[in-house]
Each structure stands twice: as C-alpha cells, then as structure tokens.
Length: 336
Image 1 (cartoon, helix red, strand yellow):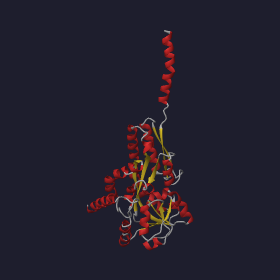
Image 2 (cartoon, rainbow, N blue to C red):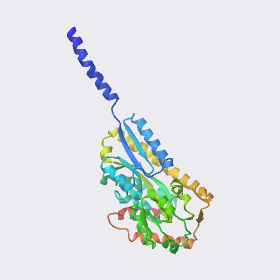
Image 3 (cartoon, rainbow, N blue to C red):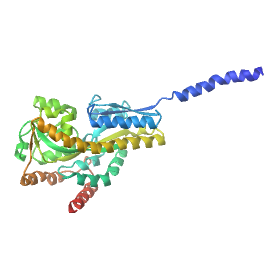
Image 4 (cartoon, helix red, strand yellow):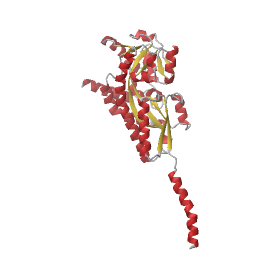
C-alpha cells in the first residue's frame, strides 16, 4: 500500500505539469505590418478577421497588426519578414509586385472602365494571382480591391501636356505605374506611400494618383485641389504571410486563417465601393475641383494604356498570358 502511494505521489506532479503545459501552450503569433492607417475600413476589417481567427482556433493562432507604416516602407517590411521579425504584411499590389508581378495585372493603366469589368475579371483570376505568391515563399490570405485611382494634384490638370509639367509621384517599386506615366511623357518621382503627404506639403511632388477614399484616409485631401474624373488604374490590396510561419500552424488552423481573412477581404470589396462613393461628396465639400473630361479628352487619355503596354516586358511585368486572358475577358464583357 505504501509502495502504491509512493508511486502515485511520484506520478502526480508529472501529470499536473503535463496538463499545465497543455493549458498554457503559446499561440502562434503572426505579426503583420501595413501602411494602412489605423481607423480605416481596411484595419477594422482585418482586425475583425483576426478576432475571428483567434476565436475559431481557440487562441492557437493570433494576428497582431502594425498599421500606419510604423514598421517602415514595403521594402523594409519584406526584409523584416525574411529575418523573422515579422511574419507577413498587407500591401498594395505595387508594393508587393516584386514577389508576384501578376498582382499588377489588374492595375495596368486604363485597363478597366467599369466595376462590372473588374468583377468579371476578378472572378476568374483572383485565385491564380494569389497562388502566384507561393514561388516567392509567401501565402496570400486575402486579396481585395481598393477601387479606381484618379489623378489628383495641387495644380489644375486637364490635359496630358499639363500632366507632363507636373511633379508626379509613383509608388516606390511600382514598375507598372512608372511605365504608365513615362508613356504619358512624365518623368515620375518614386517615393514610399508614407512619404506622399509630406512631399505634397513641401512641394517635392504636386501630383499623385489614389482612390477617392484613399485620398481621405491618407489626408491628401488637405493638400490637393484638383482631380481628373477618369479612372487611371484599379488598386488592389493583398495580405501575405511567410510560408515558414504559415507551416507552423496546423492544417485545420491554416484553413481557418484563409477562410476568415478571405471573408474580411471580401467584405472590403463592397466597403471600398461604398466608401469611394461617399468620398466623392466629401472631397467636393472640401472645395476640391473634380474635372470631367470630354469624350474626346477621355479617348486621348486612354491612349496611354496601349502605349504603356508596348513597354511592359521582363521579369517585373505580369505574364503575357494573364494580360492576354484578362483583355479577352474584358472584351467579352463589353460585347454584352
């Protein structure tokens, strides 16, 4: 009897220790950086997705965000991901195009004219574009549209000649935007997104392109005075995580990650449309002049698309086959 008690007294601490270890197992924390300002719809929905992930995985997976560019520009964030300081980022297509040039296929200049065209194309190509990040060691958890970008300036711009005289910003590393403006005869100034507000303030640049809602989110509306009411390109955002970090998560929890972040980004698609519509009125109330070009002027601007397309080639460019397939899909929509 004493021997039995002795064995039990020996085993009990080991059992309790094992149970304690199970109960206090550390969650896999996925640290995500982004230039998206806190308080925006993007951050609200991404946080909602993170909350859902934590709940459904019973705390095994947590996502921690670093918004507003506090972790640096996109290049810095990618370096921090490589050394394990971060596990992922939420980027615009241009910011992460070095990891997957096909993500810029949606942002070719003057490619889309309507939301219906965007919807038809994305229904067929979103998954292909997300899969394309895997070759660079990333897993894309969500892809969403921010809406159409428009030319915005502190000066009046109604013609291509006036644009040529402007100091135009392009996102750092955005190969497609750089080609597009060069095709319009502009020598653009490349800067990180986080530097645009200050550069508009100092006069380093006087012209940039963004969505209506984006101009308000980044406070550009306090500096710009003129907008050309013509969609220049379509802006996308994507959240990617390092595959090494992703593989530390169980298969079941990986499915939850993709599901909940995917849902958050799907909600953002609709929210962005609504926010951009509301933002137009807000910009007008701010006293910003929105210039509507004539049909003839529109045709002149849209020539930039084919001119830029001739120069798009090489490793930094979307693959020719995806560009061709997207063009075919848009043509089919326009026939209808």
